[in-house]
Length: 507
Image (tube, rainbow, N blue to C red; front, side, top):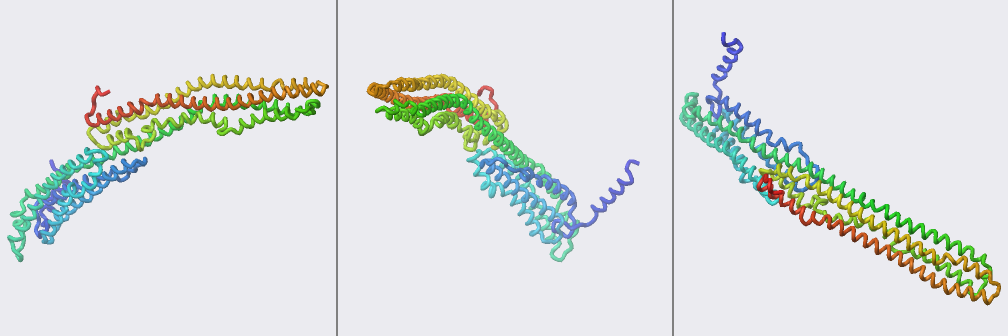
């Protein structure tokens, strides 16, 4: 037997169900084919219920206002449509199972639901999406409008069919009068099966048109998610690059410390020598007792005072030397369009291109997104080369400073021997003459000694300033193409790609 017993039982049950008189469409008599409406409505509702799924569990992690503004608009549109569409389905389901006899009220609810969903694109959505035009242009708004116009075809078909069914229900009621009995035969005369078929087709069309709205929502959220992750990655790269400038500046530490150590070691040695001379002065009894002996002791104090003056300079030698590293750190401002990514006009153009959800959005984003990382690497490479060149120059300067420091010893190294000679003179007149002569000579030498300290400090300050200027010039020149041509050109390429799509000749 071709048909199983189970199949026969199911077929029999279906026939019983179909034959059972069931009041529908606000009428007390059954309408043929109503069961198809429920199935079509369920399928349409399944499509409507997932329109806003992509927005439910999505969270933006990078604090970029643009991303939040676009996401908020997309989320609002998706969340607005879902209940509007659901209400259309639920009102039609309610209509199909209603037997109240209140045709206008029940049909009115369904027609109102369709009207509300239809008018959303003109009445409410513009207030949500129009502000996006100045942020990301029109592509996303146009997709939303087209999506709702697409869905509007189904809603329009449903509206026409519902009006036809409503009129049929009214006519059926009018045919039997207030006290008459409404039969399925009467209903069939006024509510043709073709109208039910049109309603089912309208629901099928609604189910078929909703996915384009879901795609628009999903694809935009996808773009926002990609942009969000990109901003996090770029911010991390910027932090590493800015951190690396301290590392690059640290490359100067070696030469700075070498120059500082040469100065410290020499002045410490000179200070030790002068302290020894002052300490041994009292042992030169004849010199100490001579008429100008105190002048010699005072001169030794003047020599030592030059060291104290150097230590008390403002800014100190260490501070002057350390300021050289600031030249590296501060000059990074040239690349601000790379480092301050939240305010970067080029980064903004790339993100706008991506989340605008235009024809070439993701293509253009992936085409140019890594250029920023490459530029950041270039900044670090160029900075390190500039520092390496300056370190070589400063090595020569260190040698010069050491030679200048060595000369200082000649200004006092013979004092001990000269005083010993004078101390051996027993004739008071000759002793006084010897001490007076030494006092005059070493007074001039002490003045020259002090001038050398002042000159040395001034030389260091000037050379470090010059070194810093050379670094700034080198760094700015190396980055000048970045700000003057590379970034503007990248902006132009991103914009052109977004407007025209792939073009192998644009490079």
